[in-house]
Length: 283
Image 1 (cartoon, rainbow, N blue to C red):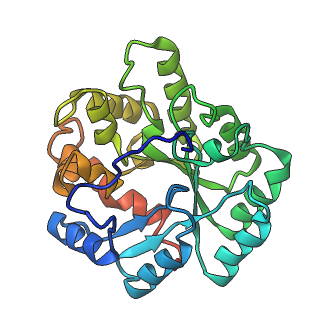
Image 2: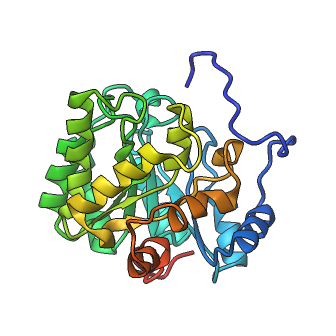
């Protein structure tokens, strides 16, 4: 971000750089997906109103996660606007350095005492906070900070994105592997979960071909560490459509992870997410 690089983020068919809610619903129908959670990142800017319009039009199928920059000029006012006025019950903090808030605000710390108000209010209001902590070893990969937060705010609900971004490109790097395991182990806390969005995409960038045996190995290891109740399937479309079809992103799990029982699969593709996201009143 800000380094002059051009990144193709949408598949070539989206030649007008749009991916509308109607397009998403058609993809969902094609793959047999009933419900979805809409996430945002700083590379889009503040799209809260756009997301709100979509989830209000299709409340039985979509839940929206609000964009929030805790290091902006007026974060408390922004938080209360998206929660009190707009009605969001999910907030995503995209913290990665390349496309997230750590690129905009170098040196940010999740456990900065000046942010205590956010964690306290999120706990009190039952807000689900989604954290994209970037690559293992990066400045945003603040596992110890998150550990302190969930111990301090025992009722705070956190979802860590992308299976904590396993180091697929450097699988023999023991240091990065330890960092990844430490972050996965956060899901042993009762109110912490891990989503699987973009896991196939990370495998592609590491040179793997479908159905991504190394990515499946990392998933299996994570399951053994924290248990199946802590995993939420996700796709991360439209960006991931560069490398896979939407049905492939689902069948990577449902057809090729043969270490999962039918009951395990049901939990990961829907039941766990229903408990985390859809048990709340959301916009």
